Amino acid sequence: MSLRSLLRGILTFGQGVVRGLPEAAEDRDPIELFEDWFAAARDSGLMLPEAMALSTATPDGVPSSRMVLLKGVDERGFRFFTNYESRKARELDANPHAALLSHWAVLERQVRVEGRVERLSAEESFAYFRTRPRGSRIGAWASQQSRPLASRAELEARVAEMERRFEGQDVPLPPFWGGYLLRPSRIEFWQGRANRLHDRLEFTRDGEGWSAQRLYP
Image (cartoon, rainbow, N blue to C red; front, side, top):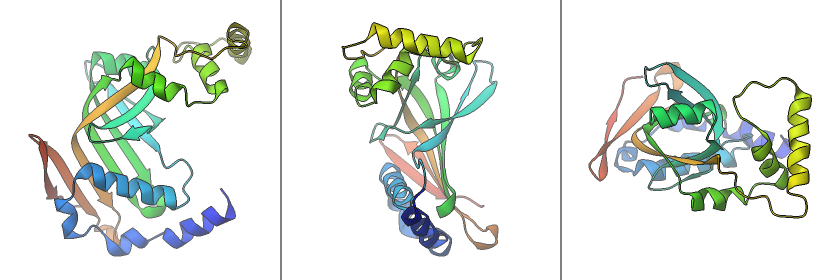
């Protein structure tokens, strides 16, 4: 983190604690409110403000969590990408309910999102894939994500194999790799406040719109 980003983070720290969530926030569209909070996290100088915890579960309810990167949000929901043969993808395909958690410590803010998940189209996945650095695209082909790996050398050998395979050409979208869209049914905004009397504002899907209510901390 640069000195400039560090100073920006120090100056930003505690602003939300003092200001809290105004009453007018209950009348906001939660997607737009999330976009505002995400912009504030990005402007604060945080490293990887797009990092979020993704929680999935098996059909019989055994949970697991890991960090992924938010790659887009709009009125439909939240987008992220992965290997479709990974553990997270297998669980999402078998049980398409998931939760996301964004936590921006310097702002003392977090956002919890719950909803159903569906695969993005190949066109949407390709549009994102082509923006990745070539090395990351090669890595997507080389990694058999979540499968046992005998040694680091084995992975490096697969990378070298894919570099030879795609030498002098564009790296295509792997058929086993792509995106997911989480369509939110519940979004909760949490703002840290003094004496642990935090602000919590919960939005739940209500037909085509949203209903909002405050929660005790």
